[in-house]
Image (cartoon, rainbow, N blue to C red; front, top):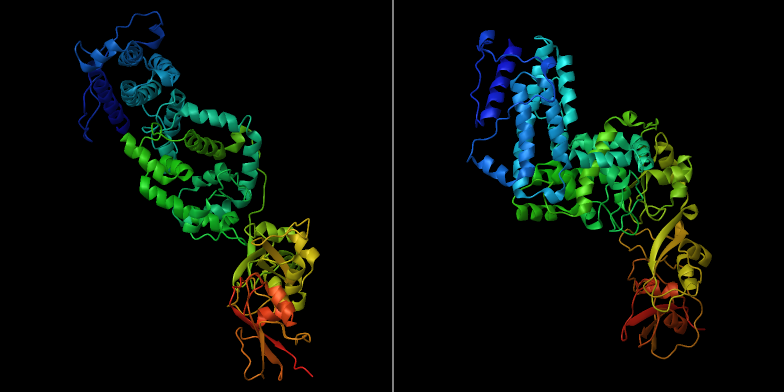
Length: 599
């Protein structure tokens, strides 16, 4: 009974298509099939031939459509094909009707951009809706010509054949796998343009697609878990594919970085750390979490995935302006960069190939999922040492922590979590805690001050000139400049332990300074003991009896020259006065030092 009701409903739809009815009254559940005697006489398909002259019923003279078609012979040809197919179906000739529809769609696709204007676009949208309905009537008539009790598999088969017409699938029965929300939104795209990118990914760009599929296998479970947690479609994993190819190190010409190609400002907005030490845009877990938040925000703004993909590429504000200027939100007709338009098409094509890679001749290898343990690491610590404590190769730890830009964890962070291979976390934490400070190489960032040399900097940090030069790729050790940023390797025992200090603080000087010569001009002296010694840094206490000397800074002075005049080391002058090696001093400033008593 349900099949007959469906057939009658489609027959009424067919009548509406032919007469231009605006609406069709709903059928009641008790509608039964009318007597055969009341049905239109059947013209058998084997009696049909292409030369038959079938009268085509066009709109009445003077109707708005008829007036427009008189002025537009190109559109009149399309309308003629549509009504020819409609008339054939009315004569119970579904297969010839379908053939005409096929011709109609080829003619429509062949229209170039130069052929299109606002009238053409309006007409073609109407034509697409009518052809979509007519195609479903053709499918049902085909079914009824074979059996009146078609099972679901036959229904799906007949409707699947209709896909060859490149028609919208909004009326496909539920027996055919339903499309996801993101696939439904993508249906608005030009199928020929999407196919062009499918042909690229399976042709000239085949190597890229194969690499994407291979890398995706390793990281898809982590990405899926973050998308699921955010309530987002899993198909969005293909956005990461066309953004970065699942390559954490990739950087665009515009400066976008990492799996999800975040610009630094956007990354920081979504709480990703981006500084000299760490760039979490390279981190799959953290970057995917940030991307999920951004995509959720974009979907709340636009409510359409084609617009979301476009906005992710070119920015939400540009898409908002384009919609406002156009007065509609049809992504096909919005004014946007060609790169963005292709971005949406590439996403749809990558998703299509990714649905069934084997159908396109791709082999997806079995790759272990990314998995890891996490270990909290205090202060700046070399990745090589962490790997040694975990009992694995350095590259294994570096691969799990691509956000560490300097091969070390950031300084003065007691809770920075480093990933190590699964099963090695407990051992790594235990052995790392047991490493003596004097054997742990840590790191500091140093800004070169005026008058400083590499030798002075190395001495201040208790390291070697060669180590600093090699690490910072300095060929000529005499050519450093004020303001240069250097990464300094140093023994952990000499690294400052006070978390309030900055990363460029130097080791505290505990030994007494060298014997001074006669006090230079501009220097005053005063005896002192431990109880009266100033202690600006809370770290230096001079031995009893040492005398305090003061010096008023003059124009052109440097810390190194002042230390030499006072007969003390540079480290001593820095420690006593609570300075840094890169500190700027000013004329009139008073500095202090402590010297042994004269005999």
